[in-house]
Amino acid sequence: MTPRLASAAMPLLRALDAETAHRAALCALRAGLAGADRRPDPPVLAARLFGRALSNPVGLAAGFDKDALALVPLFRLGFGLVEAGTATPRPQAGNPRPRLFRLPEDRAVINRMGMNNRGIAAFAARLSALPRPLPGLLGANVGINKDGADPERDYPDLYEAVAPHADYVALNLSSPNTPGLRDLQAEARMAAILSAVAERRARLPRRPPVAVKIAPDLAPEALAPIVETCIAHGVAALIVSNSTIARDPSLRSAARGEPGGLSGRPLFAPSTDLLRRAHALARGRLELIGCGGVEDGATAYAKLRAGASAVQLYSALAYEGPALLRRIKDELAALLARDGFATAADAVGADLR
View 1 (cartoon, helix red, strand yellow):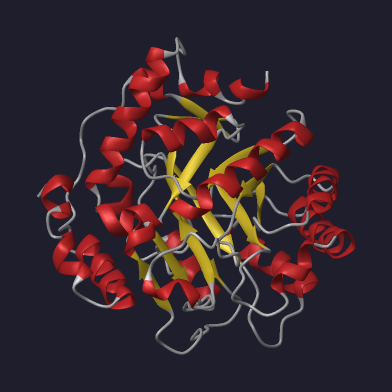
View 2 (spheres, helix red, strand yellow):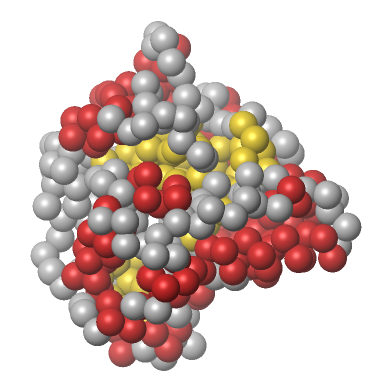
């Protein structure tokens, strides 16, 4: 089966409630029913992240494969990077259902999953069992439990657990569905966590780069301290951004009032603005991954031009299915060629030069 044929089944999945459909999609991936895209990426899509060459800059965001159950099939779809997780120290059931909602008129999703996952031990074991080499970058996204958390203890432990198996480790400090988690983005608290992670990282034989995922709802004055704190503690990248708790009055879908994190098309503008400001503040000292509202070649291209070395998507995949990835890459390649860029890496930050 090809991704195009698999996408033809999306109306059937949308007949299910959102969480059941998501689980069905993971099962289909594991069973090989989503197909594979074996066409090579055109050279114009070449990108770089964490010093590694990528055949394309289009990635899958954390949250789709929380437990690292379908990573090889996801890479076969043609992603340049795939981020698994979020994994927490102990297994966690998450919030009561229903907790995942489609907003079809707005091409958006609201989730209040609560970082449900099977825990870091099972997560790391699955990463360890993956065949190597993988065709793209593997990210491991980690976060703290809702109860009994000690961030300065837990994040270093989580980093150490996945360091032997991941190409980078993303620290989730910004999920809106874990009480108090976003408070960890305050300068002093973030500095303490990143210092503890850096100290542990320095003692390990394998030290994948650290990324920090931030919220789109930061106060304007909060971004500069986050950028400088990350740089001071050896963080390699920011992922900009997580889902938003904001609700634009223009939202039309029936579920627009559900609490939780909003992702998809309405997140594109605020997350891209935050990305652009982060790029200006970082001045080349941090790499950036653009996440939020990527749904076609134009939105991916806008993220690159705003400063992202790579982009991530999730919500659009839930609407379009796996054929979306090839369409995004084809459209992005055409836009890069139209504007005279030899590679995607050459377009990074073009709007701010």
